[in-house]
Amino acid sequence: MDLPRLIVVQGGSAVGKTTLTRIIARELGYDAIGKDHFKELLYDTLGVPKDREDSRVYGRAATAALFAVAEQLLLTKKDIVIESAFHKGLAEKDISDLVASTGARVLQLYLFADPQTVASRFNARIATGERHHAHPDKPKQPEDFLQYGDTYGKLGIEPAIEIDTSKMSKEDYSVIIDEIKEVYRG
Image (cartoon, rainbow, N blue to C red):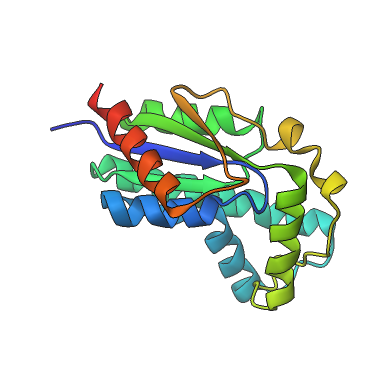
């Protein structure tokens, strides 16, 4: 049997990680797992954290849950896509350990966009009022997103496909799906 496939969708806020993850899952038949789902469950179950440090604990727990579920799915030979704003310099070990324990064939999709586009998307998402209360976002300016390359930059995971989502169209998603298929063919 072929080794399971693991796609890691990486990038900062509002670069299109969740949208692309859902498209990949639908088009390729992969299971999809996002850190935000676990974080929201923790908020709904345990309540709102009392301070910033508690919020960080929730985030670490959500990340641990994501990797635990990912490992179980990969061990059953399921192809999966995981997504989060993984911290560069920290996430590589978790992903490397996941690959080592499951034998998965990994591919990183690193998403980024220009700061103006990210700020516009981020603020539009807030304006809908539909975002879960686990994300107490406040409006931001483009310069607020300049640190992304340092914090949520491309991970040291190869192979990797870099995707500028500043001006994505429906046709671009088809190209990305084809690129993913090509990587796993080789």
